[in-house]
Image (cartoon, rainbow over all chains, first blue to last red; front, side):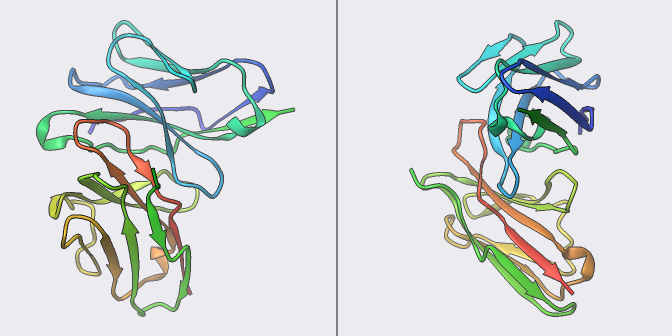
Length: 113
Length: 113
């Protein structure tokens, strides 16, 4: 399985943008890039996913490098509720592996008021 | 729509005892996952079902763990006998066919003493 590398922790000030990096140098052409986050004492929740183009939704933006070997999750204005562990995951969408993915240890985001 | 339901939320057992966890996925979600999350680590996939068939159980310790999804809806995960290293949060997730997003339940926190 292709692996991802993320910093263990990051800090941000409230209402400032946050850029969470992820390296995935062994990504294959059939891997989608997914981001999930896990708030304390909860199960992970989906944030965003993409293949090649940058993506935006109500929660965040995903910027994908042209060579797809790295990506960045962007929270435009961090709030205290965004404090969580953020996981960058590669998901192989070929039929046999549909939905299969491997979670790393993620980045713990601390948001300071 | 109702989310993924799991029970119990907490369980404390002694080593060598047995325990079972229950999961009710979101209605209409054909794919169901069980994950093990040890404190400080990301979730690790134990088993994946597509309807009532097993798609991937390569990381399930089959000598002590078993899981079933007899009618393609609810699922149970059993540990027999439990070991100290099984102390973790057990997460259930489900996904609708043709989509990428996994929806996670709140998890069951197991403590083995």
